[in-house]
Image (cartoon, rainbow, N blue to C red; front, side):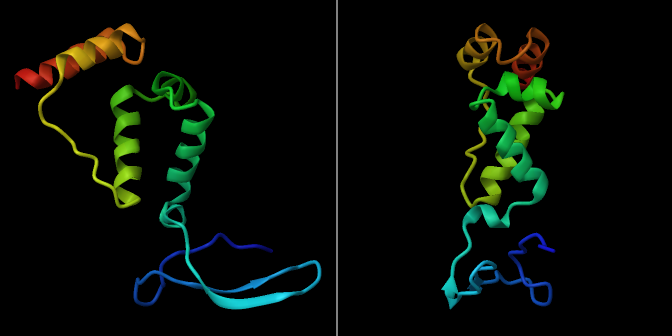
Length: 123
């Protein structure tokens, strides 16, 4: 039985290193210090989201439909994953009106979502 890969030590919380690889067919064993990818630190829910996002080719509207969630929720999940991977999300408090209009024209957001975004700008 295979167990899911853990990336942090359950005792001290530090990142784990892979030190042993084994072939179940020929029983070859390789020992060294191997690094985990940044994606190994993501949770199952985040990895599932990434899979859907890629399947939808980054089309947020399609991700919304697939998961049954709103545009802001999709953006929030993306920002969470970006932060978890160690990158800055550069969240801006100012809403770019032209960007909102462009997203609306491309059917990436609904008219109601556009109104909510534009109302945030005025607050």
